[in-house]
Image (cartoon, rainbow, N blue to C red; front, top):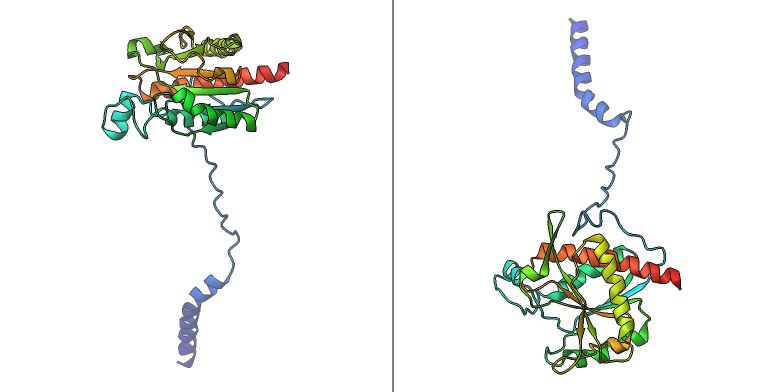
Length: 261
């Protein structure tokens, strides 16, 4: 009887201590901490144009600014704020400038963006001191005054590989002695864009005479270009694809010019 009681007491003691023993004995394998996931999130504006990052061997410098910073696109303002407008305080050309800056920087191009706001009337004259100050601080390989043009969608849209792109125009002010140098820079960028998306650019818009600015501050630097990105009816997707084309073409132009130097 005593033997039986001893056996039962031992069994009860073992059952009582078993959970404690299990928790104190280290397991054979320590669970590995999960590896942090690599952030592969990125924005692709033109998958058939820029499928990988462009690495510029000789990185240059670019400056972006907006003489008419409130210029906007009807489909974009409607989608973002519910208001159809061609001028908007927030949903305007500067947003696409930010995207262009991001794309240029991903290509290794040091990019500054001047976002000072000036009144629409007399804008080129009023923004000039700010641009001059930036040019005194740094030498740029490419300077872009980014705008939105006025024509309707049938004149500002191209279809390539089943994708819509906003057409791109270059304005050249002829009323200064060195405008041919700005024209040459525009033609080099235009050529690279056409290699990427045939038909994406419009003919150069040569400006002079009464009723126009005539210089567009391009007398400040031969690399200063006035670029018209699409028109009032282009959509955000169309504009984003064209921004990607501008960035890739600009990277090539800057790299080529650096190689020559």
